[in-house]
Image (tube, rainbow, N blue to C red; front, side):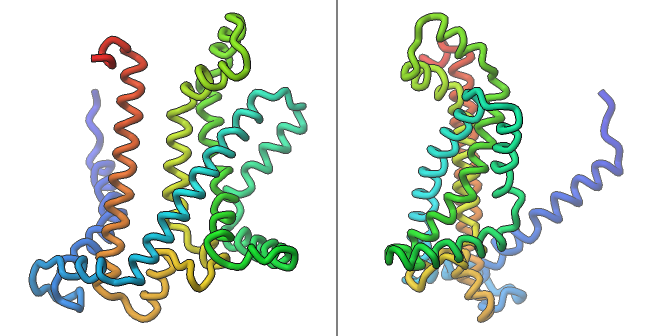
Length: 275
């Protein structure tokens, strides 16, 4: 096997440093006891302690978690159903092409346009029902709006890789629609569903634009809190908070990736999976 050239190695290392050095710098400053990050004083976790004791940060973290969990659960359910419906229903060629275009719109549309559209819709709905006041409800609806498309695209790619032969075989063995869905389709789609849910969850965690336009005074999330703090001046608590969010995201991704790998290994070798 031919070894990679020196230029390729240097460029690869340079790209990795470009991507991860800023993150490492934030983590480095979060354990610096000096209030001014450019001056190293000593190693300390006091900024993490202050972060945990800050009620505003705790409230923002709770809002972020509630928003991400609820929106991901709803978007994963709707996105999976949408993907299955688009692939299995006998749509006409033109109609299916039109639906594909609509599905890609939330992905390619700039967040600022989608956020502005949501503001207009919520203003109209607020005249009809007072429950659409800016807050967690409007933020959750806004997140679900763009998350559905990402989940549906990931699940559809899983359906395309599997094909329809397995479902056809199940129907030949007299499987009804309910049995086919719960015992054939969903188990086969589970890696794609998990991947789509992970993508939706991470998008919700770090979303700023849509959250900013649809939030209320009592529904501040971590991205909004970080933005407000940066405008007043970056503090070490923000470095600590950013590091915690990064670590939680990395742990989440590796955990789901590991679970998916174990699940696939058990399916490929049932005897070993039982052991």
